[in-house]
Image 1 (tube, rainbow, N blue to C red):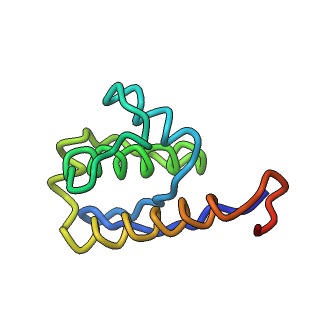
Image 2 (cartoon, rainbow, N blue to C red):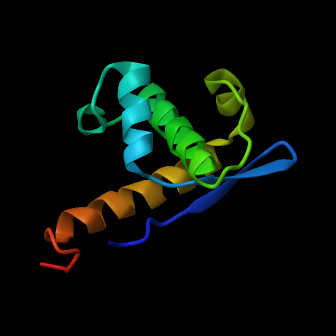
Amino acid sequence: MSKAKQVTVKIGEASYPCRMSMGAMLRFKRETGKEVSEIKDGSISDLAVLLYCCVASACNAERKEFNLTLEDFCDGISTEDMTTMSAAIQSEVEEGAEEDGEGKKK
């Protein structure tokens, strides 16, 4: 099992972990009614929700308090934060696609 890559996002005075996980994908499905694979290129709102779900899930896994609403989260992140987080998540997704069922590179 490979360890998920993680970035940290700072919102206000607090720092939060952000990484893709099964929990994040489940949260995204519950929030939007869509699978992560259904995100369209250029959909900033879907990307913002996904990043929010990645932070909420990572915080939950680490037992770190995270009480921001989606709107508060979006108000607190910059476009640079969004680019950094989405690039890290995209890299993780691409690496996962290259692995076979045993966690080895194809």
